[in-house]
Length: 190
Image (cartoon, rainbow, N blue to C red; front, side, top):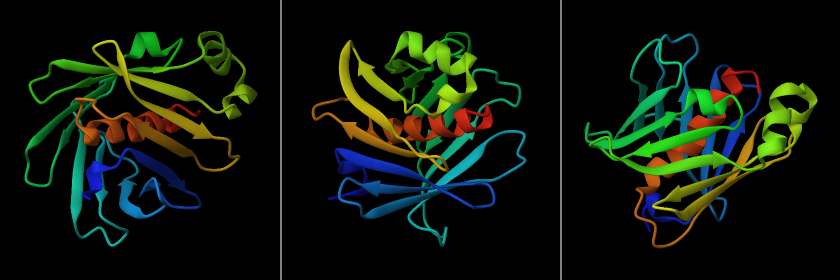
């Protein structure tokens, strides 16, 4: 089975690290990827590698513009082939985190939304509520294709991502969207 053929992934933030680092595991706990976000970059340039040696890249995630309030990220494979894009809907995300997933031609093929409308708003207003775990629903053409659940932890984040069979969205984009949601949320102080 290939790295991107799984139906379940776990994304774990490495704690006590310089910069943001994440491990990506398959549903059985096997490590299949490592992500390192370099600190102090004007434009995000995030890489997913096979492991902590950072010798073999799996995906490159690059922010398109320096002053992109929404945050649109191009996703490419190591050969430079475009996989697609993930982008945060900035104004809607003030109330409830919302992301879009685009194919390589920039056609919208999916949407990611934070569950819990009232609770989502309250999380933004009352800082202690940020510790309540979040859940996101991924949809494509009105059908739920995946779900991401955050595990309660005081330090570091862990996300459980389950991708439903039969979805037509590239799993690399689903995993990237889940990862970027956490990275952007951490930058906002959440």
